[in-house]
Image (cartoon, rainbow, N blue to C red; front, side, top):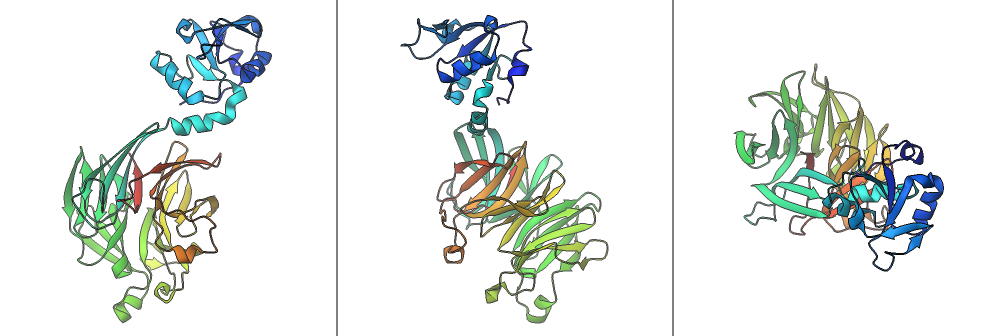
Length: 396
């Protein structure tokens, strides 16, 4: 990706003459900031400009470029010219940069040229169609080209990276691993538990699984032998009915953080007092809620030393003391982070009536939002409507 630069850094280039790519207003402003004696000529893709002079500099065809020159892009067609130069053998940031006049465009260019491989899960009904229904999907983003393939079929939820493999939950079939382009079942789960999220504690050498239908977090050793049942409350034992809808979790040292729709166990009574609850893994005791008053939260995670969570119904990404850092017009579920970008799942909103009054624009699309929280810009990667739902995302 192209990196931002400054005129001060460009002025330090002593061993090469400079060529500007693009004649126009940006080139004029760039020339004013540079030592004119360092600028050899200008190139432009427009045939009508070639052969003319601009700011007393000859305008030539880009085929005149060689590695003897340092190139500065001076055009809003940044992505196209960057790709053109790459195909000609020039390396970004080494052989060419973007004019600092265009620094605002670099965020757009980098999002458009992003290359990232993701895995995401869908908890839909299993079927044999290649791009439909529940399963584990591989999503390869290469610029504006996106390739999606299903690598496992089944109602799939939590996924984590563990050593040289990915471990994920198929709530109907058990625990699976994905390695070397193959999936393999590695453990059973309690029948009817409706397992969702999974996390691992290196300190305790244990896996933890949030089970919606048990109102509990199950602790397993590394061979997936059950060890403990961490209960969210006594309601399930008393009534035999689920009350909290726990759906995800993340373990840090001796703390297990769990997202659920209702802290008090009343979401089926239309009381959505969602929270992140904390368990002490030494004692198994549920401690005070870390944050309350969330509306269908999911995907509690830990990136760059900070807890993150998706407040799904209002479409909020929360971090930095769990404050709102991004808002999106959809049901957000599925969260990963890599190299400054958040990858946020957007599912078809099945709770339209509940969002009325919260959002003025409710999206029905399913896809992945690529979000730069520092610059507050995003890109949307559309997924087939036949997939519909995303539960977890993991960067490869």
